Amino acid sequence: NADLAMYRAKATLGENLCFFQHGMDETARQRRQLAADLRHAVDRGELSLLYQPQRSLHTGQLSAYEALLRWHHPTRGLVPPDDFIPIAEENGEIIRIGEWVLREACREARKWQSTIKIAVNLSPVQFLQPGLVETLREILVETGLSPSRLELEITETAIISDKLRALHCLRQIKSMGVSVAIDDFGTGYSSLDTLHSFPFDKIKIDKSFMSRAEHSNQARAIIRAVLALGRSLQIPVLAEGVETEKQLAVLRDEGCDEAQGYLFGRPAAPPREREDASEPARTASATGN
Ligand code: C2E
Ligand code: MG
Ligand code: MG
Ligand code: MG
Image (spheres, rainbow, N blue to C red):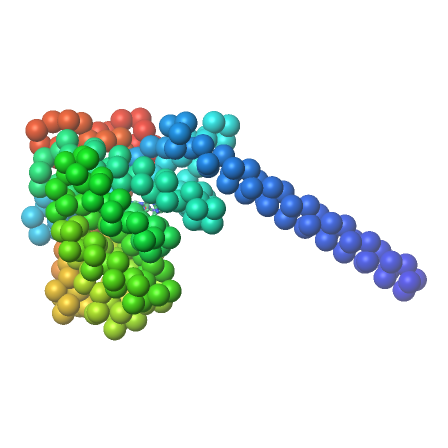
């Protein structure tokens, strides 16, 4: 009976829609809850930083540690940055959180050997915020860290929305002696022209290219192209997400300058306070990622 079949189909569709709707409500509710919880994260001491080494492939030396944010939620446990940073950007909390990250990272780096830099990720919201330069100045004075030891990592998203403003921000930061790297390069929409007119100190090739480098000629071609670009603009290139010896061999072949990834060390607790803070502490929290 055609009517009955139609009736059943409609009923099923209705149920599915209802389920779908419920799923959406639940996701929205969870997001609102996380956003509310995030407002107390700094004050309640729920944030921490892990540090991942970056190595020079020319000298083998440790050149920097990148600070990576972790949120220890009281009931949900560890929430990864990709899950809460977009929420913090939406509700504005990223400004306070970002300031906490900068202060904490600079304070920590002050304890290390003076040749090692600290790399700190900056949200586009934070980068384009009017008070950033003053905040940076205050934090550097307060922690006593030399500006030359701080490197900020920004993504292409931070520069494409308003190029003039971004260029102004970048110049101000650089005039303080702080360096700036472009992160996740190759995944955004910036043109070669943009890269040329922005005085970056480092290009970080996105880890998605590394994961495909061993098997995909295309990924390898992109890595090669970015390296050529870096050479012609005289900007050092770092490869992210290096996990295997094979990948490292590819990078050496192509003449990559620096690398970062599980092969060299996972994000881990702050390096111990020894004279040459040359290795990250391999504590249990290395599993934090
Ligand atoms: P990112 O800055 O590109 O950081 C690299 C990410 O790759 C980190 O993820 C790191 O743990 C992971 N990673 C490192 N080596 C490897 C590897 O060999 N293989 C693989 N598969 N992954 C590797 P994490 O810590 O989850 O951070 C994700 C993103 O969250 C970061 O990407 C960054 O965009 C953002 N983020 C982290 N900390 C902060 C922060 O303090 N402020 C802001 N605004 N964003 C942050
Ligand atoms: Mg980064
Ligand atoms: Mg990256
Ligand atoms: Mg990233």
